Image 1 (tube, rainbow, N blue to C red):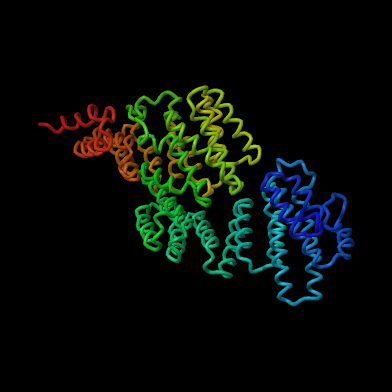
Image 2 (cartoon, one colour; image 1 turned 135 degrees about the horizontal axis):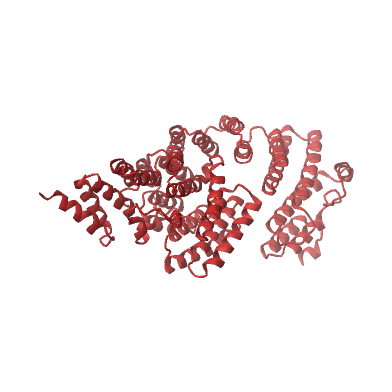
Length: 573
Protein backbone atom coordinates (compact mmCIF):
# COMPACT_ATOMS: atom_id res chain seq x y z
CA UNK A 1 0.00 0.00 0.00
CA UNK A 2 2.85 2.37 0.83
CA UNK A 3 4.42 1.72 -2.57
CA UNK A 4 1.15 2.31 -4.34
CA UNK A 5 0.94 5.77 -2.80
CA UNK A 6 4.61 6.55 -3.56
CA UNK A 7 5.92 4.29 -6.31
CA UNK A 8 9.25 6.11 -6.52
CA UNK A 9 10.29 5.57 -2.89
CA UNK A 10 13.62 3.74 -3.29
CA UNK A 11 14.29 3.09 0.40
CA UNK A 12 10.86 1.57 0.77
CA UNK A 13 11.48 -0.72 -2.18
CA UNK A 14 14.77 -1.86 -0.68
CA UNK A 15 13.01 -2.68 2.59
CA UNK A 16 10.38 -4.64 0.70
CA UNK A 17 13.08 -6.51 -1.26
CA UNK A 18 14.83 -7.41 1.96
CA UNK A 19 11.55 -8.73 3.34
CA UNK A 20 10.96 -10.86 0.24
CA UNK A 21 14.49 -12.21 0.53
CA UNK A 22 13.94 -13.18 4.18
CA UNK A 23 10.70 -14.89 3.14
CA UNK A 24 12.75 -16.88 0.60
CA UNK A 25 11.02 -15.30 -2.37
CA UNK A 26 14.06 -14.07 -4.34
CA UNK A 27 12.20 -13.57 -7.62
CA UNK A 28 9.87 -11.02 -6.01
CA UNK A 29 12.81 -9.28 -4.35
CA UNK A 30 14.66 -9.06 -7.68
CA UNK A 31 11.56 -7.69 -9.42
CA UNK A 32 11.11 -4.99 -6.77
CA UNK A 33 14.74 -3.86 -7.02
CA UNK A 34 15.08 -3.89 -10.80
CA UNK A 35 12.02 -1.62 -11.03
CA UNK A 36 13.91 1.20 -9.28
CA UNK A 37 17.02 1.09 -11.47
CA UNK A 38 17.73 3.80 -14.02
CA UNK A 39 18.52 2.78 -17.63
CA UNK A 40 22.25 3.10 -16.92
CA UNK A 41 21.98 0.62 -14.05
CA UNK A 42 19.80 -1.95 -15.77
CA UNK A 43 21.80 -5.15 -16.07
CA UNK A 44 21.91 -6.34 -19.67
CA UNK A 45 24.34 -8.55 -21.51
CA UNK A 46 24.64 -6.41 -24.63
CA UNK A 47 25.81 -3.10 -23.10
CA UNK A 48 29.48 -2.17 -22.92
CA UNK A 49 31.02 0.44 -20.65
CA UNK A 50 30.82 3.25 -23.22
CA UNK A 51 27.07 2.79 -23.57
CA UNK A 52 26.65 2.76 -19.80
CA UNK A 53 28.58 6.02 -19.50
CA UNK A 54 26.35 7.64 -22.14
CA UNK A 55 23.20 6.51 -20.34
CA UNK A 56 24.55 7.71 -17.00
CA UNK A 57 25.29 11.20 -18.32
CA UNK A 58 21.66 12.20 -17.91
CA UNK A 59 21.38 10.81 -14.36
CA UNK A 60 21.92 12.92 -11.27
CA UNK A 61 24.58 12.11 -8.70
CA UNK A 62 21.93 11.12 -6.16
CA UNK A 63 20.29 8.77 -8.68
CA UNK A 64 23.62 7.11 -9.48
CA UNK A 65 24.43 6.65 -5.78
CA UNK A 66 21.00 5.13 -5.24
CA UNK A 67 21.54 2.85 -8.26
CA UNK A 68 24.85 1.56 -6.88
CA UNK A 69 23.31 0.81 -3.48
CA UNK A 70 20.41 -0.99 -5.15
CA UNK A 71 22.73 -3.02 -7.37
CA UNK A 72 24.76 -4.12 -4.35
CA UNK A 73 21.62 -5.23 -2.53
CA UNK A 74 20.50 -7.02 -5.70
CA UNK A 75 23.86 -8.80 -5.85
CA UNK A 76 23.49 -9.89 -2.22
CA UNK A 77 20.07 -11.40 -2.92
CA UNK A 78 21.29 -13.10 -6.10
CA UNK A 79 24.28 -14.56 -4.27
CA UNK A 80 22.19 -15.86 -1.40
CA UNK A 81 19.91 -17.69 -3.84
CA UNK A 82 22.29 -18.19 -6.78
CA UNK A 83 21.50 -21.90 -7.13
CA UNK A 84 17.81 -21.69 -6.34
CA UNK A 85 16.74 -18.67 -8.37
CA UNK A 86 16.13 -18.97 -12.09
CA UNK A 87 16.75 -15.27 -12.69
CA UNK A 88 18.88 -14.62 -15.78
CA UNK A 89 20.74 -11.87 -13.90
CA UNK A 90 24.33 -12.78 -13.05
CA UNK A 91 25.58 -11.53 -9.63
CA UNK A 92 29.00 -10.79 -11.09
CA UNK A 93 27.49 -8.71 -13.89
CA UNK A 94 25.49 -6.83 -11.26
CA UNK A 95 28.63 -6.07 -9.25
CA UNK A 96 30.52 -5.00 -12.36
CA UNK A 97 27.69 -2.63 -13.30
CA UNK A 98 27.88 -1.16 -9.80
CA UNK A 99 31.64 -0.78 -10.25
CA UNK A 100 31.23 1.13 -13.52
CA UNK A 101 28.62 3.44 -12.01
CA UNK A 102 30.78 4.03 -8.94
CA UNK A 103 33.63 5.04 -11.24
CA UNK A 104 31.30 7.61 -12.85
CA UNK A 105 30.24 8.81 -9.40
CA UNK A 106 33.88 9.23 -8.44
CA UNK A 107 34.55 11.38 -11.52
CA UNK A 108 31.54 13.60 -10.72
CA UNK A 109 32.54 13.96 -7.05
CA UNK A 110 36.09 14.97 -8.00
CA UNK A 111 34.68 17.92 -9.96
CA UNK A 112 32.25 19.30 -7.39
CA UNK A 113 33.08 18.00 -3.91
CA UNK A 114 35.81 18.19 -1.30
CA UNK A 115 38.79 15.85 -1.04
CA UNK A 116 37.17 14.18 1.98
CA UNK A 117 34.15 13.25 -0.13
CA UNK A 118 36.43 11.95 -2.87
CA UNK A 119 38.30 9.82 -0.32
CA UNK A 120 35.01 8.40 0.97
CA UNK A 121 33.89 7.45 -2.54
CA UNK A 122 37.28 5.88 -3.30
CA UNK A 123 36.92 3.68 -0.20
CA UNK A 124 33.45 2.68 -1.35
CA UNK A 125 34.92 1.86 -4.77
CA UNK A 126 37.50 -0.33 -3.05
CA UNK A 127 34.76 -2.20 -1.19
CA UNK A 128 32.98 -3.01 -4.47
CA UNK A 129 36.25 -4.22 -6.00
CA UNK A 130 36.74 -6.55 -3.04
CA UNK A 131 33.24 -7.94 -3.46
CA UNK A 132 33.94 -8.66 -7.13
CA UNK A 133 37.23 -10.31 -6.15
CA UNK A 134 35.59 -12.53 -3.52
CA UNK A 135 32.95 -13.74 -5.95
CA UNK A 136 35.55 -14.38 -8.66
CA UNK A 137 37.67 -16.31 -6.15
CA UNK A 138 34.67 -18.38 -5.14
CA UNK A 139 34.01 -19.21 -8.80
CA UNK A 140 37.62 -20.10 -9.46
CA UNK A 141 38.37 -17.10 -11.71
CA UNK A 142 41.58 -16.33 -9.88
CA UNK A 143 43.09 -13.89 -12.41
CA UNK A 144 40.00 -11.69 -12.28
CA UNK A 145 39.96 -11.98 -8.49
CA UNK A 146 43.59 -10.88 -8.29
CA UNK A 147 42.95 -7.90 -10.58
CA UNK A 148 40.07 -6.72 -8.37
CA UNK A 149 41.92 -7.23 -5.10
CA UNK A 150 44.77 -5.13 -6.48
CA UNK A 151 42.35 -2.50 -7.83
CA UNK A 152 40.81 -2.23 -4.36
CA UNK A 153 44.20 -1.36 -2.88
CA UNK A 154 44.81 1.21 -5.60
CA UNK A 155 41.70 3.05 -4.41
CA UNK A 156 42.42 2.57 -0.70
CA UNK A 157 46.14 1.93 -0.20
CA UNK A 158 45.97 1.96 3.61
CA UNK A 159 43.15 -0.54 3.92
CA UNK A 160 44.66 -3.10 6.31
CA UNK A 161 41.76 -5.58 5.93
CA UNK A 162 42.10 -5.36 2.14
CA UNK A 163 45.84 -5.95 2.34
CA UNK A 164 45.34 -9.01 4.53
CA UNK A 165 42.65 -10.33 2.20
CA UNK A 166 44.99 -10.04 -0.79
CA UNK A 167 47.81 -11.54 1.27
CA UNK A 168 45.56 -14.50 2.11
CA UNK A 169 44.75 -14.86 -1.59
CA UNK A 170 48.47 -14.98 -2.46
CA UNK A 171 49.02 -17.62 0.22
CA UNK A 172 46.00 -19.87 -0.34
CA UNK A 173 45.61 -19.65 -4.12
CA UNK A 174 48.97 -18.70 -5.57
CA UNK A 175 51.19 -20.19 -2.85
CA UNK A 176 53.28 -17.01 -3.08
CA UNK A 177 54.59 -16.73 0.46
CA UNK A 178 56.86 -13.76 -0.33
CA UNK A 179 54.02 -11.62 -1.73
CA UNK A 180 51.86 -12.61 1.22
CA UNK A 181 54.58 -11.62 3.65
CA UNK A 182 55.05 -8.20 2.02
CA UNK A 183 51.34 -7.38 2.19
CA UNK A 184 51.11 -8.64 5.74
CA UNK A 185 53.99 -6.40 6.78
CA UNK A 186 52.33 -3.46 5.01
CA UNK A 187 49.06 -4.10 6.89
CA UNK A 188 50.95 -4.12 10.19
CA UNK A 189 52.57 -0.79 9.29
CA UNK A 190 49.10 0.63 8.84
CA UNK A 191 47.84 -0.87 12.10
CA UNK A 192 50.45 -2.51 14.31
CA UNK A 193 47.76 -4.18 16.43
CA UNK A 194 45.54 -5.46 13.61
CA UNK A 195 44.82 -8.99 14.80
CA UNK A 196 44.19 -10.71 11.43
CA UNK A 197 47.51 -9.36 10.12
CA UNK A 198 49.34 -10.54 13.22
CA UNK A 199 47.63 -13.92 12.95
CA UNK A 200 48.61 -14.24 9.29
CA UNK A 201 52.17 -13.20 10.10
CA UNK A 202 52.28 -15.94 12.70
CA UNK A 203 50.88 -18.43 10.20
CA UNK A 204 53.59 -17.48 7.72
CA UNK A 205 56.20 -18.16 10.36
CA UNK A 206 54.67 -21.56 11.00
CA UNK A 207 54.73 -22.29 7.24
CA UNK A 208 58.44 -21.57 7.36
CA UNK A 209 58.54 -24.03 10.26
CA UNK A 210 59.53 -21.30 12.69
CA UNK A 211 57.04 -22.38 15.33
CA UNK A 212 58.85 -20.55 18.12
CA UNK A 213 58.48 -17.17 16.38
CA UNK A 214 54.89 -17.92 15.38
CA UNK A 215 54.05 -18.86 18.94
CA UNK A 216 55.65 -15.63 20.17
CA UNK A 217 53.46 -13.54 17.87
CA UNK A 218 50.29 -15.26 19.01
CA UNK A 219 51.36 -14.87 22.62
CA UNK A 220 51.60 -11.15 21.96
CA UNK A 221 48.08 -11.16 20.51
CA UNK A 222 46.66 -12.99 23.50
CA UNK A 223 48.57 -10.83 26.00
CA UNK A 224 47.28 -7.67 24.29
CA UNK A 225 43.74 -9.00 24.41
CA UNK A 226 43.18 -12.15 26.50
CA UNK A 227 39.59 -12.25 25.23
CA UNK A 228 40.71 -12.67 21.62
CA UNK A 229 39.63 -16.30 21.60
CA UNK A 230 40.37 -16.84 17.91
CA UNK A 231 43.99 -15.95 18.60
CA UNK A 232 43.98 -18.13 21.71
CA UNK A 233 42.69 -21.10 19.69
CA UNK A 234 45.47 -20.55 17.15
CA UNK A 235 48.03 -20.30 19.93
CA UNK A 236 46.89 -23.57 21.50
CA UNK A 237 47.29 -25.26 18.13
CA UNK A 238 50.77 -23.79 17.65
CA UNK A 239 51.84 -24.71 21.15
CA UNK A 240 50.83 -28.26 20.39
CA UNK A 241 52.83 -28.25 17.18
CA UNK A 242 55.81 -26.71 18.96
CA UNK A 243 55.65 -29.40 21.65
CA UNK A 244 54.75 -26.85 24.35
CA UNK A 245 51.12 -27.68 25.04
CA UNK A 246 51.79 -27.52 28.79
CA UNK A 247 51.90 -23.71 28.46
CA UNK A 248 48.28 -23.55 27.27
CA UNK A 249 46.42 -24.00 30.61
CA UNK A 250 48.08 -20.88 32.02
CA UNK A 251 46.92 -18.83 29.03
CA UNK A 252 43.36 -20.04 29.45
CA UNK A 253 43.54 -19.11 33.12
CA UNK A 254 44.67 -15.58 32.15
CA UNK A 255 41.69 -15.27 29.81
CA UNK A 256 39.32 -16.44 32.55
CA UNK A 257 40.65 -13.84 34.98
CA UNK A 258 40.42 -11.05 32.41
CA UNK A 259 36.63 -11.24 32.09
CA UNK A 260 34.33 -12.28 34.95
CA UNK A 261 31.87 -13.65 32.39
CA UNK A 262 34.53 -15.53 30.46
CA UNK A 263 33.49 -18.90 31.91
CA UNK A 264 30.25 -18.74 29.91
CA UNK A 265 31.81 -17.36 26.72
CA UNK A 266 31.59 -19.72 23.75
CA UNK A 267 35.07 -18.71 22.54
CA UNK A 268 36.78 -19.63 25.80
CA UNK A 269 34.85 -22.90 26.03
CA UNK A 270 35.88 -23.73 22.47
CA UNK A 271 39.52 -23.15 23.43
CA UNK A 272 39.07 -25.33 26.52
CA UNK A 273 37.58 -28.05 24.34
CA UNK A 274 40.49 -27.86 21.89
CA UNK A 275 43.04 -28.11 24.71
CA UNK A 276 41.19 -31.02 26.35
CA UNK A 277 40.99 -32.79 22.98
CA UNK A 278 44.74 -32.45 22.51
CA UNK A 279 45.29 -33.67 26.09
CA UNK A 280 43.15 -36.74 25.37
CA UNK A 281 40.59 -35.69 28.01
CA UNK A 282 37.56 -36.56 25.95
CA UNK A 283 34.92 -35.99 28.61
CA UNK A 284 36.09 -32.41 29.25
CA UNK A 285 36.45 -31.80 25.50
CA UNK A 286 32.85 -32.87 24.83
CA UNK A 287 31.50 -30.79 27.72
CA UNK A 288 33.41 -27.69 26.62
CA UNK A 289 32.48 -28.00 22.94
CA UNK A 290 28.84 -28.44 23.94
CA UNK A 291 28.97 -25.04 25.67
CA UNK A 292 30.25 -23.47 22.42
CA UNK A 293 28.14 -25.23 19.82
CA UNK A 294 25.27 -22.70 19.75
CA UNK A 295 27.53 -19.72 19.08
CA UNK A 296 27.46 -17.94 15.71
CA UNK A 297 31.27 -17.61 15.58
CA UNK A 298 32.53 -20.83 17.18
CA UNK A 299 29.43 -23.02 16.84
CA UNK A 300 30.22 -24.74 13.54
CA UNK A 301 33.82 -25.48 14.55
CA UNK A 302 32.62 -26.90 17.88
CA UNK A 303 29.99 -29.06 16.15
CA UNK A 304 32.52 -30.43 13.65
CA UNK A 305 34.94 -31.23 16.48
CA UNK A 306 32.18 -33.02 18.41
CA UNK A 307 31.22 -35.10 15.39
CA UNK A 308 34.86 -36.09 14.89
CA UNK A 309 35.01 -37.23 18.51
CA UNK A 310 31.79 -39.23 18.44
CA UNK A 311 32.43 -40.85 15.07
CA UNK A 312 36.14 -41.29 15.79
CA UNK A 313 36.90 -40.60 12.14
CA UNK A 314 40.67 -40.56 12.59
CA UNK A 315 40.43 -44.15 13.79
CA UNK A 316 43.09 -43.81 16.46
CA UNK A 317 43.09 -40.81 18.75
CA UNK A 318 40.00 -41.48 20.80
CA UNK A 319 39.44 -45.20 20.35
CA UNK A 320 40.85 -46.14 23.74
CA UNK A 321 38.57 -43.69 25.48
CA UNK A 322 35.40 -44.73 23.75
CA UNK A 323 35.75 -48.46 23.22
CA UNK A 324 37.88 -51.47 24.02
CA UNK A 325 40.05 -51.94 20.96
CA UNK A 326 41.47 -55.44 21.26
CA UNK A 327 43.07 -55.34 17.83
CA UNK A 328 45.50 -52.69 18.98
CA UNK A 329 46.60 -54.86 21.86
CA UNK A 330 47.42 -57.98 19.92
CA UNK A 331 51.01 -59.09 19.68
CA UNK A 332 52.46 -56.99 16.88
CA UNK A 333 54.21 -59.92 15.27
CA UNK A 334 51.14 -60.90 13.23
CA UNK A 335 51.08 -58.01 10.81
CA UNK A 336 50.79 -60.00 7.62
CA UNK A 337 47.27 -59.12 6.56
CA UNK A 338 46.94 -55.91 4.61
CA UNK A 339 43.41 -55.42 5.94
CA UNK A 340 45.04 -54.39 9.20
CA UNK A 341 46.46 -51.30 7.51
CA UNK A 342 43.23 -49.53 8.24
CA UNK A 343 41.27 -50.20 11.37
CA UNK A 344 37.81 -48.67 11.23
CA UNK A 345 37.10 -48.01 14.89
CA UNK A 346 33.78 -49.32 16.10
CA UNK A 347 31.13 -46.63 16.41
CA UNK A 348 28.27 -47.48 18.72
CA UNK A 349 24.69 -46.83 17.66
CA UNK A 350 24.34 -44.21 20.42
CA UNK A 351 27.47 -42.38 19.34
CA UNK A 352 26.34 -42.37 15.71
CA UNK A 353 22.89 -41.12 16.72
CA UNK A 354 24.44 -38.21 18.63
CA UNK A 355 26.78 -37.43 15.72
CA UNK A 356 23.85 -37.30 13.28
CA UNK A 357 21.92 -35.00 15.63
CA UNK A 358 24.95 -32.69 15.80
CA UNK A 359 25.21 -32.79 12.03
CA UNK A 360 21.59 -31.63 11.77
CA UNK A 361 22.39 -28.67 14.02
CA UNK A 362 24.90 -27.36 11.49
CA UNK A 363 22.02 -26.42 9.16
CA UNK A 364 21.09 -23.50 11.44
CA UNK A 365 24.45 -21.90 10.62
CA UNK A 366 24.31 -22.37 6.84
CA UNK A 367 23.84 -18.65 6.18
CA UNK A 368 27.00 -17.91 8.18
CA UNK A 369 29.27 -20.62 6.79
CA UNK A 370 32.02 -19.60 4.37
CA UNK A 371 32.87 -21.78 1.33
CA UNK A 372 35.88 -23.39 3.05
CA UNK A 373 33.77 -24.45 6.03
CA UNK A 374 31.03 -25.68 3.69
CA UNK A 375 33.52 -28.10 2.14
CA UNK A 376 34.63 -29.24 5.58
CA UNK A 377 30.99 -29.92 6.52
CA UNK A 378 30.59 -32.05 3.38
CA UNK A 379 33.69 -34.07 4.34
CA UNK A 380 32.33 -34.76 7.83
CA UNK A 381 28.98 -35.82 6.38
CA UNK A 382 30.73 -38.23 4.03
CA UNK A 383 32.61 -39.71 6.98
CA UNK A 384 29.35 -40.10 8.85
CA UNK A 385 28.21 -42.36 6.04
CA UNK A 386 31.44 -44.35 6.27
CA UNK A 387 30.87 -44.88 9.99
CA UNK A 388 27.52 -46.62 9.52
CA UNK A 389 27.71 -50.39 9.93
CA UNK A 390 24.43 -51.29 8.25
CA UNK A 391 24.26 -51.28 4.45
CA UNK A 392 27.98 -50.53 4.41
CA UNK A 393 28.48 -50.91 0.66
CA UNK A 394 25.70 -48.48 -0.27
CA UNK A 395 26.85 -45.93 2.34
CA UNK A 396 30.44 -46.26 1.14
CA UNK A 397 29.34 -45.60 -2.46
CA UNK A 398 27.37 -42.52 -1.39
CA UNK A 399 30.32 -41.20 0.59
CA UNK A 400 32.68 -41.77 -2.35
CA UNK A 401 30.35 -39.87 -4.68
CA UNK A 402 30.23 -36.93 -2.26
CA UNK A 403 34.02 -36.87 -2.10
CA UNK A 404 34.35 -37.19 -5.89
CA UNK A 405 32.02 -34.20 -6.33
CA UNK A 406 34.26 -32.18 -4.02
CA UNK A 407 37.39 -33.22 -5.91
CA UNK A 408 35.72 -32.23 -9.19
CA UNK A 409 35.50 -28.69 -7.75
CA UNK A 410 38.96 -28.74 -6.14
CA UNK A 411 41.11 -31.54 -7.47
CA UNK A 412 43.72 -31.32 -4.70
CA UNK A 413 41.40 -30.75 -1.73
CA UNK A 414 43.33 -32.56 0.98
CA UNK A 415 40.47 -33.65 3.31
CA UNK A 416 38.64 -35.17 0.33
CA UNK A 417 41.74 -37.11 -0.75
CA UNK A 418 42.11 -38.46 2.77
CA UNK A 419 38.41 -39.36 2.87
CA UNK A 420 38.69 -41.18 -0.47
CA UNK A 421 41.65 -43.18 0.82
CA UNK A 422 39.71 -44.19 3.93
CA UNK A 423 36.67 -45.11 1.83
CA UNK A 424 38.80 -47.23 -0.53
CA UNK A 425 40.30 -49.08 2.44
CA UNK A 426 36.88 -49.78 3.92
CA UNK A 427 35.81 -51.05 0.50
CA UNK A 428 38.91 -53.25 0.28
CA UNK A 429 40.53 -51.34 -2.61
CA UNK A 430 44.00 -51.01 -1.09
CA UNK A 431 45.87 -50.05 -4.25
CA UNK A 432 43.52 -47.16 -4.95
CA UNK A 433 43.81 -46.08 -1.32
CA UNK A 434 47.58 -46.09 -1.50
CA UNK A 435 47.52 -44.04 -4.72
CA UNK A 436 45.24 -41.45 -3.12
CA UNK A 437 47.55 -41.20 -0.13
CA UNK A 438 50.66 -40.90 -2.31
CA UNK A 439 48.97 -38.06 -4.17
CA UNK A 440 48.23 -36.41 -0.83
CA UNK A 441 51.84 -36.68 0.34
CA UNK A 442 53.06 -34.83 -2.76
CA UNK A 443 50.99 -31.72 -1.94
CA UNK A 444 52.61 -28.78 -0.10
CA UNK A 445 52.01 -28.44 3.61
CA UNK A 446 49.03 -26.28 4.58
CA UNK A 447 48.30 -25.24 8.14
CA UNK A 448 44.58 -25.28 7.37
CA UNK A 449 44.77 -29.00 6.56
CA UNK A 450 47.64 -29.92 8.87
CA UNK A 451 45.68 -32.62 10.74
CA UNK A 452 44.41 -34.15 7.49
CA UNK A 453 47.92 -34.29 6.07
CA UNK A 454 49.19 -35.82 9.31
CA UNK A 455 46.51 -38.51 9.24
CA UNK A 456 47.30 -39.21 5.59
CA UNK A 457 51.04 -39.52 6.25
CA UNK A 458 50.42 -41.90 9.14
CA UNK A 459 47.88 -43.99 7.27
CA UNK A 460 50.31 -44.47 4.41
CA UNK A 461 53.10 -45.17 6.91
CA UNK A 462 50.97 -47.95 8.41
CA UNK A 463 50.55 -49.46 4.96
CA UNK A 464 54.30 -49.31 4.37
CA UNK A 465 54.98 -50.95 7.74
CA UNK A 466 52.70 -53.83 6.84
CA UNK A 467 54.70 -54.29 3.64
CA UNK A 468 57.96 -54.12 5.65
CA UNK A 469 58.97 -50.89 3.88
CA UNK A 470 60.28 -49.43 7.10
CA UNK A 471 62.42 -46.65 5.59
CA UNK A 472 59.48 -45.16 3.70
CA UNK A 473 57.27 -45.41 6.77
CA UNK A 474 59.84 -43.73 8.99
CA UNK A 475 60.31 -40.88 6.50
CA UNK A 476 56.58 -40.16 6.71
CA UNK A 477 56.69 -40.27 10.52
CA UNK A 478 59.57 -37.80 10.55
CA UNK A 479 57.59 -35.54 8.24
CA UNK A 480 54.74 -35.58 10.77
CA UNK A 481 57.14 -34.66 13.57
CA UNK A 482 58.59 -31.86 11.46
CA UNK A 483 55.18 -30.17 11.43
CA UNK A 484 53.92 -31.38 14.81
CA UNK A 485 56.32 -32.13 17.64
CA UNK A 486 53.38 -33.45 19.69
CA UNK A 487 52.45 -36.17 17.20
CA UNK A 488 52.28 -39.20 19.45
CA UNK A 489 51.12 -41.46 16.63
CA UNK A 490 54.33 -40.85 14.69
CA UNK A 491 56.37 -42.07 17.66
CA UNK A 492 53.95 -44.96 18.08
CA UNK A 493 54.42 -46.02 14.45
CA UNK A 494 58.21 -45.81 14.76
CA UNK A 495 57.96 -47.87 17.93
CA UNK A 496 55.98 -50.45 15.99
CA UNK A 497 58.76 -50.54 13.37
CA UNK A 498 61.41 -51.13 16.07
CA UNK A 499 59.20 -53.79 17.63
CA UNK A 500 58.90 -55.65 14.31
CA UNK A 501 62.69 -55.50 14.09
CA UNK A 502 62.80 -57.07 17.60
CA UNK A 503 64.64 -53.99 18.89
CA UNK A 504 62.56 -53.82 22.06
CA UNK A 505 64.74 -51.32 23.89
CA UNK A 506 64.46 -48.79 21.05
CA UNK A 507 60.76 -49.59 20.64
CA UNK A 508 60.17 -48.85 24.31
CA UNK A 509 61.86 -45.45 23.93
CA UNK A 510 59.59 -44.61 20.98
CA UNK A 511 56.45 -45.80 22.76
CA UNK A 512 57.47 -43.86 25.86
CA UNK A 513 57.48 -40.62 23.89
CA UNK A 514 54.07 -41.46 22.41
CA UNK A 515 52.75 -42.32 25.89
CA UNK A 516 53.90 -38.98 27.31
CA UNK A 517 52.47 -37.03 24.36
CA UNK A 518 49.12 -38.74 24.93
CA UNK A 519 49.34 -37.52 28.55
CA UNK A 520 49.58 -41.09 29.82
CA UNK A 521 45.92 -41.77 29.03
CA UNK A 522 46.06 -43.92 25.88
CA UNK A 523 45.53 -47.53 26.87
CA UNK A 524 46.67 -49.04 23.51
CA UNK A 525 49.94 -47.11 23.62
CA UNK A 526 50.40 -47.91 27.28
CA UNK A 527 49.89 -51.59 26.54
CA UNK A 528 52.56 -51.51 23.81
CA UNK A 529 54.95 -49.62 26.07
CA UNK A 530 54.49 -52.09 28.92
CA UNK A 531 54.91 -55.02 26.52
CA UNK A 532 58.22 -53.67 25.20
CA UNK A 533 59.42 -52.85 28.71
CA UNK A 534 58.74 -56.51 29.49
CA UNK A 535 60.63 -57.69 26.39
CA UNK A 536 63.53 -55.35 27.26
CA UNK A 537 63.58 -56.82 30.79
CA UNK A 538 62.59 -53.47 32.35
CA UNK A 539 60.13 -55.20 34.64
CA UNK A 540 59.60 -52.42 37.19
CA UNK A 541 58.69 -49.90 34.48
CA UNK A 542 56.38 -52.47 32.89
CA UNK A 543 54.55 -52.96 36.20
CA UNK A 544 54.27 -49.20 36.70
CA UNK A 545 52.66 -48.68 33.27
CA UNK A 546 50.28 -51.63 33.80
CA UNK A 547 49.10 -50.15 37.10
CA UNK A 548 48.48 -46.75 35.48
CA UNK A 549 46.41 -48.33 32.71
CA UNK A 550 44.41 -50.51 35.09
CA UNK A 551 43.71 -47.48 37.28
CA UNK A 552 42.10 -45.76 34.30
CA UNK A 553 40.64 -48.88 32.66
CA UNK A 554 40.19 -51.65 35.27
CA UNK A 555 38.80 -54.12 32.72
CA UNK A 556 41.30 -53.44 29.97
CA UNK A 557 41.86 -56.82 28.25
CA UNK A 558 45.01 -58.96 28.39
CA UNK A 559 47.27 -56.51 30.19
CA UNK A 560 46.89 -58.03 33.66
CA UNK A 561 47.54 -61.62 32.59
CA UNK A 562 49.99 -61.16 29.70
CA UNK A 563 52.19 -58.36 31.05
CA UNK A 564 51.61 -57.47 34.70
CA UNK A 565 51.71 -61.02 36.06
CA UNK A 566 54.66 -61.91 33.80
CA UNK A 567 56.65 -58.89 34.99
CA UNK A 568 55.90 -59.65 38.65
CA UNK A 569 56.92 -63.29 38.21
CA UNK A 570 60.16 -62.22 36.51
CA UNK A 571 61.12 -60.16 39.58
CA UNK A 572 60.59 -63.03 41.98
CA UNK A 573 63.76 -64.88 43.00
